[in-house]
Length: 232
Image 1 (cartoon, rainbow, N blue to C red):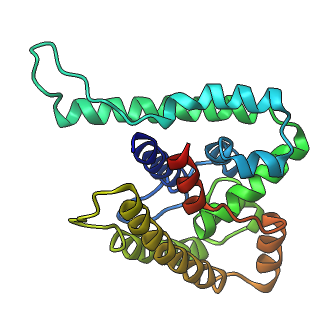
Image 2 (cartoon, rainbow, N blue to C red):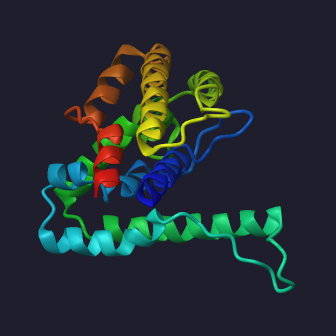
Image 3 (tube, rainbow, N blue to C red):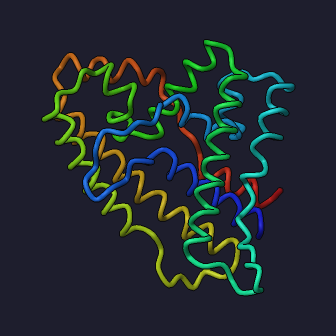
Protein backbone atom coordinates (compact mmCIF):
# COMPACT_ATOMS: atom_id res chain seq x y z
CA UNK A 1 0.00 0.00 0.00
CA UNK A 2 2.83 2.40 0.88
CA UNK A 3 4.43 1.86 -2.52
CA UNK A 4 1.15 2.64 -4.25
CA UNK A 5 0.88 5.89 -2.31
CA UNK A 6 4.54 6.66 -2.94
CA UNK A 7 4.19 6.20 -6.67
CA UNK A 8 1.06 8.34 -6.77
CA UNK A 9 2.93 11.10 -4.91
CA UNK A 10 5.83 10.76 -7.32
CA UNK A 11 3.55 11.07 -10.33
CA UNK A 12 2.01 14.21 -8.88
CA UNK A 13 5.53 15.60 -8.49
CA UNK A 14 6.21 14.81 -12.15
CA UNK A 15 3.12 16.63 -13.22
CA UNK A 16 4.03 19.54 -10.98
CA UNK A 17 7.53 19.84 -12.39
CA UNK A 18 6.37 19.51 -15.98
CA UNK A 19 3.67 22.15 -15.52
CA UNK A 20 5.74 24.34 -13.24
CA UNK A 21 4.33 27.55 -14.64
CA UNK A 22 0.72 26.91 -13.65
CA UNK A 23 -0.71 30.34 -12.81
CA UNK A 24 -4.12 32.13 -13.04
CA UNK A 25 -2.93 33.30 -16.46
CA UNK A 26 -0.56 30.90 -18.18
CA UNK A 27 2.59 32.65 -19.36
CA UNK A 28 5.79 31.43 -21.06
CA UNK A 29 7.79 29.36 -18.59
CA UNK A 30 11.48 29.30 -17.72
CA UNK A 31 11.79 25.53 -17.40
CA UNK A 32 13.90 23.47 -19.81
CA UNK A 33 12.25 20.39 -21.33
CA UNK A 34 15.50 18.43 -20.95
CA UNK A 35 15.77 19.28 -17.25
CA UNK A 36 12.09 18.41 -16.78
CA UNK A 37 12.89 15.07 -18.43
CA UNK A 38 14.92 14.14 -15.37
CA UNK A 39 11.57 13.36 -13.75
CA UNK A 40 11.20 10.32 -16.00
CA UNK A 41 14.64 8.78 -15.54
CA UNK A 42 13.55 6.40 -12.76
CA UNK A 43 10.95 4.79 -15.02
CA UNK A 44 12.13 1.36 -16.25
CA UNK A 45 10.58 1.90 -19.68
CA UNK A 46 12.47 5.16 -20.15
CA UNK A 47 15.71 3.62 -18.90
CA UNK A 48 15.31 0.83 -21.46
CA UNK A 49 14.44 3.26 -24.28
CA UNK A 50 17.58 5.30 -23.53
CA UNK A 51 19.73 2.18 -23.33
CA UNK A 52 21.14 3.09 -19.91
CA UNK A 53 23.89 0.86 -18.59
CA UNK A 54 23.28 -1.07 -15.34
CA UNK A 55 25.82 1.16 -13.61
CA UNK A 56 24.11 4.39 -14.71
CA UNK A 57 20.68 2.99 -13.85
CA UNK A 58 21.88 2.10 -10.36
CA UNK A 59 23.28 5.59 -9.80
CA UNK A 60 20.08 7.26 -10.97
CA UNK A 61 17.86 5.02 -8.85
CA UNK A 62 20.01 5.67 -5.78
CA UNK A 63 19.94 9.45 -6.32
CA UNK A 64 16.20 9.69 -6.98
CA UNK A 65 14.81 7.01 -4.63
CA UNK A 66 14.61 9.41 -1.69
CA UNK A 67 12.04 11.49 -3.60
CA UNK A 68 9.79 8.47 -4.15
CA UNK A 69 8.86 8.43 -0.48
CA UNK A 70 5.90 10.50 0.75
CA UNK A 71 6.70 13.52 2.86
CA UNK A 72 6.26 13.08 6.61
CA UNK A 73 5.35 16.38 8.31
CA UNK A 74 7.75 17.18 11.15
CA UNK A 75 6.41 18.53 14.41
CA UNK A 76 7.56 21.98 15.46
CA UNK A 77 9.72 22.63 18.53
CA UNK A 78 6.67 22.96 20.78
CA UNK A 79 5.34 19.58 19.68
CA UNK A 80 2.48 21.00 17.63
CA UNK A 81 1.78 20.02 14.02
CA UNK A 82 3.63 22.19 11.48
CA UNK A 83 1.84 25.24 10.12
CA UNK A 84 0.76 25.52 6.51
CA UNK A 85 3.64 27.91 5.88
CA UNK A 86 6.13 25.42 7.33
CA UNK A 87 4.72 22.59 5.22
CA UNK A 88 4.87 24.73 2.07
CA UNK A 89 8.45 25.71 2.86
CA UNK A 90 9.40 22.05 3.29
CA UNK A 91 7.64 21.13 0.04
CA UNK A 92 9.45 23.88 -1.87
CA UNK A 93 12.78 22.75 -0.42
CA UNK A 94 12.07 19.18 -1.46
CA UNK A 95 11.13 20.26 -4.98
CA UNK A 96 14.34 22.29 -5.23
CA UNK A 97 16.39 19.32 -4.04
CA UNK A 98 14.59 17.05 -6.51
CA UNK A 99 15.26 19.41 -9.41
CA UNK A 100 18.95 19.48 -8.46
CA UNK A 101 19.05 15.67 -8.36
CA UNK A 102 17.28 15.49 -11.73
CA UNK A 103 19.89 17.78 -13.27
CA UNK A 104 22.67 15.61 -11.85
CA UNK A 105 21.03 12.51 -13.32
CA UNK A 106 20.64 14.16 -16.74
CA UNK A 107 24.35 15.03 -16.62
CA UNK A 108 25.14 11.28 -16.51
CA UNK A 109 23.67 10.76 -19.98
CA UNK A 110 25.41 10.73 -23.34
CA UNK A 111 24.47 13.42 -25.90
CA UNK A 112 22.29 10.91 -27.79
CA UNK A 113 20.52 9.87 -24.60
CA UNK A 114 19.89 13.51 -23.69
CA UNK A 115 18.38 14.12 -27.12
CA UNK A 116 16.01 11.17 -26.75
CA UNK A 117 15.11 12.09 -23.16
CA UNK A 118 14.21 15.60 -24.29
CA UNK A 119 11.95 14.16 -26.99
CA UNK A 120 10.22 11.92 -24.44
CA UNK A 121 9.87 14.85 -22.05
CA UNK A 122 8.24 17.05 -24.70
CA UNK A 123 5.83 14.25 -25.62
CA UNK A 124 4.82 13.71 -21.98
CA UNK A 125 4.43 17.40 -21.16
CA UNK A 126 2.40 17.92 -24.33
CA UNK A 127 1.23 21.38 -25.36
CA UNK A 128 2.69 22.88 -22.18
CA UNK A 129 6.14 22.27 -23.63
CA UNK A 130 5.43 24.87 -26.31
CA UNK A 131 5.84 27.59 -23.67
CA UNK A 132 9.07 26.20 -22.22
CA UNK A 133 12.19 28.32 -22.50
CA UNK A 134 13.75 26.16 -25.22
CA UNK A 135 10.80 24.99 -27.34
CA UNK A 136 9.13 28.37 -27.76
CA UNK A 137 12.46 29.70 -29.04
CA UNK A 138 12.75 26.85 -31.55
CA UNK A 139 9.20 27.42 -32.74
CA UNK A 140 9.74 31.20 -32.87
CA UNK A 141 6.34 31.85 -31.31
CA UNK A 142 4.88 35.33 -31.54
CA UNK A 143 3.46 37.04 -28.42
CA UNK A 144 -0.04 36.51 -29.84
CA UNK A 145 0.60 32.78 -30.26
CA UNK A 146 2.00 32.51 -26.73
CA UNK A 147 -1.17 34.11 -25.36
CA UNK A 148 -3.45 31.80 -27.35
CA UNK A 149 -1.53 28.72 -26.24
CA UNK A 150 -1.64 29.99 -22.65
CA UNK A 151 -5.43 30.30 -22.88
CA UNK A 152 -5.67 26.76 -24.23
CA UNK A 153 -3.53 25.45 -21.36
CA UNK A 154 -5.58 27.34 -18.78
CA UNK A 155 -8.76 25.65 -19.99
CA UNK A 156 -6.96 22.31 -19.97
CA UNK A 157 -5.77 22.69 -16.36
CA UNK A 158 -9.28 23.53 -15.25
CA UNK A 159 -10.66 20.46 -17.04
CA UNK A 160 -7.98 18.22 -15.56
CA UNK A 161 -8.71 19.57 -12.11
CA UNK A 162 -12.29 18.37 -12.46
CA UNK A 163 -11.06 14.80 -13.11
CA UNK A 164 -9.38 14.53 -9.70
CA UNK A 165 -11.33 12.08 -7.50
CA UNK A 166 -13.19 13.69 -4.63
CA UNK A 167 -14.55 11.90 -1.59
CA UNK A 168 -13.47 8.56 -3.04
CA UNK A 169 -14.63 5.51 -1.08
CA UNK A 170 -11.95 3.26 -2.62
CA UNK A 171 -10.26 1.55 0.32
CA UNK A 172 -8.37 -1.37 -1.25
CA UNK A 173 -5.30 -1.11 -3.50
CA UNK A 174 -7.27 -2.62 -6.38
CA UNK A 175 -10.09 -0.09 -5.99
CA UNK A 176 -7.60 2.76 -5.75
CA UNK A 177 -5.84 1.58 -8.91
CA UNK A 178 -9.18 1.56 -10.72
CA UNK A 179 -9.92 5.13 -9.65
CA UNK A 180 -6.42 6.16 -10.71
CA UNK A 181 -6.74 4.45 -14.10
CA UNK A 182 -10.09 6.14 -14.78
CA UNK A 183 -8.60 9.52 -13.91
CA UNK A 184 -5.58 8.93 -16.15
CA UNK A 185 -7.80 7.91 -19.07
CA UNK A 186 -9.82 11.12 -18.76
CA UNK A 187 -6.71 13.25 -18.48
CA UNK A 188 -5.15 11.59 -21.52
CA UNK A 189 -8.17 12.57 -23.61
CA UNK A 190 -7.95 16.14 -22.33
CA UNK A 191 -4.22 16.21 -23.09
CA UNK A 192 -4.78 15.02 -26.68
CA UNK A 193 -7.46 17.65 -27.29
CA UNK A 194 -5.31 20.35 -25.67
CA UNK A 195 -2.39 19.51 -27.95
CA UNK A 196 -4.68 19.59 -30.98
CA UNK A 197 -6.03 23.01 -29.97
CA UNK A 198 -2.54 24.36 -29.32
CA UNK A 199 -1.24 23.04 -32.63
CA UNK A 200 -4.03 24.94 -34.38
CA UNK A 201 -2.35 28.20 -33.33
CA UNK A 202 0.87 27.27 -35.17
CA UNK A 203 1.79 27.96 -38.78
CA UNK A 204 2.38 24.97 -41.09
CA UNK A 205 6.15 25.42 -40.73
CA UNK A 206 5.89 25.57 -36.93
CA UNK A 207 3.75 22.41 -36.87
CA UNK A 208 6.40 20.61 -38.91
CA UNK A 209 9.09 21.77 -36.45
CA UNK A 210 6.90 20.80 -33.46
CA UNK A 211 6.48 17.27 -34.82
CA UNK A 212 10.21 16.94 -35.53
CA UNK A 213 11.39 17.96 -32.06
CA UNK A 214 9.17 15.30 -30.46
CA UNK A 215 10.91 12.46 -32.26
CA UNK A 216 9.62 8.91 -32.40
CA UNK A 217 6.43 8.40 -30.32
CA UNK A 218 6.98 6.89 -26.89
CA UNK A 219 4.26 5.97 -24.41
CA UNK A 220 4.71 5.74 -20.65
CA UNK A 221 2.32 3.27 -19.04
CA UNK A 222 1.63 4.99 -15.71
CA UNK A 223 -1.13 2.54 -14.77
CA UNK A 224 1.11 -0.42 -15.57
CA UNK A 225 3.88 1.05 -13.43
CA UNK A 226 1.42 1.42 -10.58
CA UNK A 227 0.44 -2.25 -10.80
CA UNK A 228 4.08 -3.32 -10.93
CA UNK A 229 5.07 -1.25 -7.90
CA UNK A 230 2.09 -2.56 -5.92
CA UNK A 231 3.08 -6.16 -6.67
CA UNK A 232 6.69 -5.35 -5.77
